[in-house]
Length: 318
Image (cartoon, rainbow, N blue to C red; front, side, top):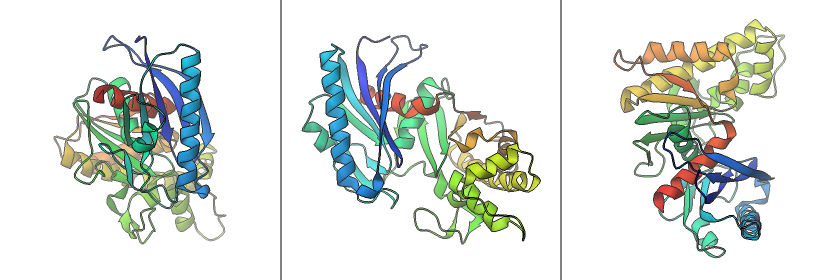
């Protein structure tokens, strides 16, 4: 294990997680994530407040590392929103984090430390973690998909995060599917994106749209998962419809990108066999014959994936 650590952050809509990540010297080794802590994002306070509290957290952590004689090799961040990797600026963000777009994160961190710095999107950080040390390890080209409150994705090709011409490569949640026709997406579209019917939020939305008279509405996707676990046949049918549609979108993405493997993570990916069986059925139905054998793999790193990926990003950039 490396003697130095990377101070990493994962900025989401609910919380900002932070940890110290030590990367292995042995390419076959496993990273070590320690001293994990978090603070609430409190998005309703706006982007300026989030940045101020992020800097305060980072300053406190850097001071604690100096006092404990822990050498820090760099600072890595995985952030919600579309990120300009080179400038360290948030290019755009949804209304889930008001005022986050336009925040100049790298410039702000330069005011508190001269350590090497790198920021990537949160799903990009997750993808770097899983492709380097998780379920995608050993595969050259990995499509990493996170299915949680929303749906995000990242393409990692030979260890390099593919960001695209506008920084939005991998946004698989905004692929079109007929199941989403007319359902408002977090991006504002109503043209049939998959996210508003297949994410955790979307699973609850789809259940409420499909429910027959006499069936009570649900507050969210977790409630649907709980009903499925309790043996509710209608909830299982809704989950299968949702997961199959996502599988069809994954097939389309793989027909285009032809990755070696797809890694699927996030809270919804833990919903169980009903979800995974339907996801794989949808993928098999839509994939070209040469693409059909592409494995759909459950993520292996859990919540540590974006912290590890942020460390990988700054280590490779240094």
